[in-house]
Amino acid sequence: MKCVADPLADQAIEEIPRVDTLSRADFVRQYLRPGKPVVIRVADGNFWTMERLLAALGDREVSALRTDGGNLRTSPEAGVHFQRIRLDEVTRALADGADPGWHVSVPLTEMPAAFTDNMPPPVYCADAPFLRSRVWLAAPGTVTPLHWDMPRNFLQLAFGHRRVLLYPPLDGLHVYPNAPTSKMPNFSRFDPENPDFEAFRSAQRARPVRGIIGPGEAMYIPPGWWHHVRSLDTSLAVNFWWGNRVIAAAWRAAQSYKGLRGLYRREWK
Image (cartoon, rainbow, N blue to C red; front, side, top):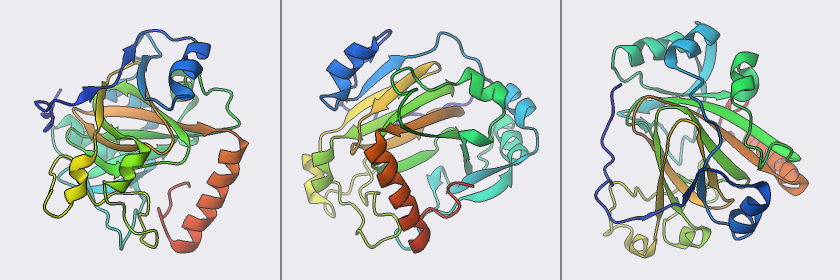
């Protein structure tokens, strides 16, 4: 399988704690209440491969984000635009070792039962009043820029590996968020892989932590934490946004706001 180097592999960055097992009570006490990230092994097997994915979905249409050289084709002025493409356009390119130019992003509700049955949410959030999920298929080197989300988040890997950089919420003062009036208000203008400390001087004060997630592992990303994600090889991930009823109401309000302003177009089919 084709892999790409992590541009930050040689940098001394604090690693996110990793645990093999964790009870729900310990998760709440050690990580949820303090608002700390952790990588947890949540499954013993690797249930999915590219071949199984193609067999399950075939040539059906899926939603995806256009990429250029692994970077999402977005801007604060244009925002994020989900498009419908045929999945086999992407899988054929990946099989040939080529960059497909897309980051597939499918609501979990569009996936077949064979997939969802083998990728249930982690037990820590399975009964949350608010739970939304997306499936992400990425080529090696695909990058999701630095951004934050309002709900709690688990990022779980079906196959492949992804490196995640995380910055605590208060570092939002130093990572130069886009203007609230932009079409990407929860994204940063700062690129931690190519830092421009002349233009973004305060970013030198930000202190990230780092973790690599592999098959059967899930990373807990607390609400408000900034995260930057790089796919180190062909990877399939599922993320689970979750929270209480207050988060559910806030999410519905945010979706209405996005619709009115044309943000994240066609995010949810």
